[in-house]
Length: 367
Image 1 (tube, one colour):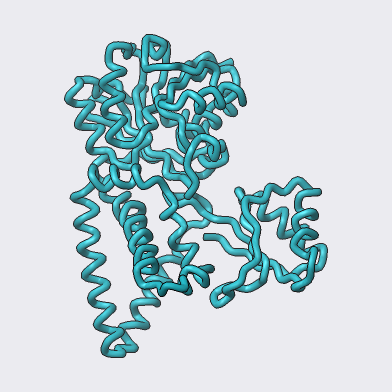
Image 2 (cartoon, helix red, strand yellow):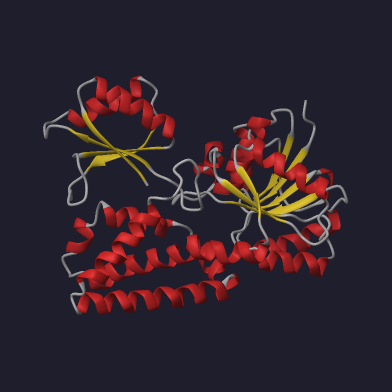
């Protein structure tokens, strides 16, 4: 039996997924939550993810063994101040922000360094909100922990094991190192993704030709632009030095490769793409980072009425959960005419087996 009590301030995609994962691992625990929109906590109470739906940040949080600050980065600092009158000495306070310097500074200012351990579950999707949360989002995701100079080992160890209970992979990293790393592998890619989308928007003609044929590779590398604009505004404001430094390096690289394109420098172009491919292929396929993996099948089907429905029914009859399905019109970089996206590797594997045994030609893609 686990009689611990967990509190959440904010319950969106990540906070909701964490609450679900904790409740799944520790069904006897108590979870309370406050969110700005009452409908969010009411929905979480109705589906059994949380036990207590709160209307404000108040004395109820004094009972918590853990409190997770799950709002956007700058709002977490404000919520932490509101929480201070109700904070019990036993409570471990943590956050889920992808920038750590700001919250660590606030913790020092408030004098609670011995109770705070920063947290960053490196997972997510392009969809936002509690309605899209799921416990599986934490599975095999790296979960960064950032301690303070006053963090006691037993408190860190307890949090470390809680992360493992959620199905994630805990890593203890200095918070300044964390902010530089996430700027490189998450923040700058989001800026670049938005820049690519805006490039197409601003370059398209009045007939929207580019928008019409955008598919395959372009949609895959820009799907993260559907994330919350407010969240990314705050991330850029709070991790500005690191993002700016890395953007400068990226701009220098783009200028260099533009020169190679202008001069038809075949050797430099080949080196550029070969280096990227080699390093990309060295990445692990068994863990997830801040930009969530996609699990996709491309199925070759005849262009006849009912063929798509037949595939969908086959998967549905065998309880395979489909995230998205549709016909691929622009096939420059893709094989197959039907693209099916799944939530998990398990669903993809089951679909691959079913479709293959029913005579379909299938190609898998892991992004």
